[in-house]
Image 1 (cartoon, one colour):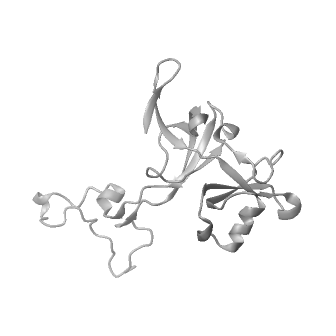
Image 2 (cartoon, one colour; image 1 turned 90 degrees about the vertical axis):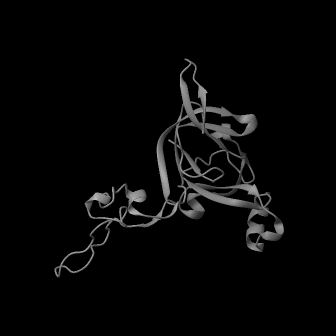
Image 3 (cartoon, helix red, strand yellow; image 1 turned 30 degrees about the horizontal axis):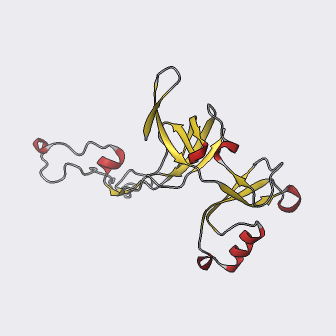
Length: 198
């Protein structure tokens, strides 16, 4: 993240997102597919690393093979044709609001203190000497003699698909394909995210 100053001199924390030009690789219509949508591809891929089926798919659109392909339903397909290039300034406007979908940072196996904010089972003065960060008792007596599902325990933390809504587009820099979004977005640096106009 970084920051910019608004027109009134106010400090605005922003996340800089590089939005490479996307190529229209397929157009979905109600007649052929039952719904309207558009498939976009981004980042060139080596031909030798592409299957023949995918190579033919991209060749039909007059494009090089792409590494990442994503379909967007409900996209306005009027005036769009195969092989067209969609740039950041064609879709987004300054002052509009967007939703960003991505995968959060993976943090590996984490205990209950880190994962859920547990305080542990007490300090060393409460009869503990080697389990301050443990979750404490989780079971019951002979009835129901099991641990209930959904109990908060240690486990994998992060790497979950998250959506952040209501983020404002602060600035667009078309010559550098940059989009400045107010506030944080999910995921580490360099991760691919989906941005939806709202």
